[in-house]
Amino acid sequence: MSGLQISFLEASARKRLIGLVDANSFTEFCPPEMRKTSPHLALLDIPLALDDGVIVGAATLAGHSILIAAQEGRFYGGAVGEVHGAKICGLLGKALTDRPSAVLLLVDSGGVRLHEANAGLIAISELVRSVLDVQAAGIPVFALVGGSCGAFGGMGIVTRLCDEVVMSEQGRLGLSGPEVIETVKGVEEFDSRDRALVWRVTGGKLRRAVGEATQLVDDLIPAFRSIAIKLTEKYQSQPLASIDLDSLLEKQAELVKRRARFERARDGLEIWQEVFSEPSCVPDMTVADFNRQLGVQA
Image (cartoon, rainbow, N blue to C red; front, side):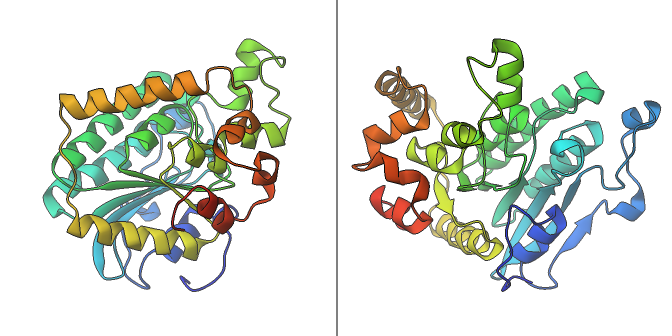
């Protein structure tokens, strides 16, 4: 499976996961046959998924032990509910005892499952704490974003906490999604039906250009696998830097500087004008050309 040129965007969560890890190495925790489904959706007589929209387990990646979770964007937009969140939190908790080489989160989520309200919000807060606990233990956490739902809402926050954020051009990352912004602020503020605008503002190329994504790869499962292997091996020889007040202040200063630089920008094209010599060519650039012009090794 890992050698096939399959689109990461179009694949199911299970196909992404199986294609990413070493062949026959995946052991699933809390599999569908355990029938751990959402009690909240059941009360509302809403269709359930036997895995509650997320697959978690252990595997190897080029021989390195990893723990991995893959959200299914096709089930209520990959939204996080009580059981969904608990499965990912449990996986992160297991990392503290098993000490894998890395934890991989294949994020494909619009945020909290509105049907579960506070339970979903609590799940996100627990995920935030769990990611920080794993990092404090010296274990890197990588977010891989290339699904149709992107990484928004609470999962956008979780994604940005990760040590590495790998995106495809088709992936999207943000806090409020385009539809939410349009609903609250009006179509004049953000037209969610303008797909080109959506990707120029939230897509992988823009997020990589401003530094929110650390890697940009092609929309292929083998491309995500290749960079995940490189990152896992990188952190084997380069332990995580400790988080202290000075490092946090340094990152805050970088954000303040970035905000000042792009304060008037209303579109990705305006940001690309600050970064690239030929900004109008950016949408048509291959990932390799984009990375090269950005000064990044693909």
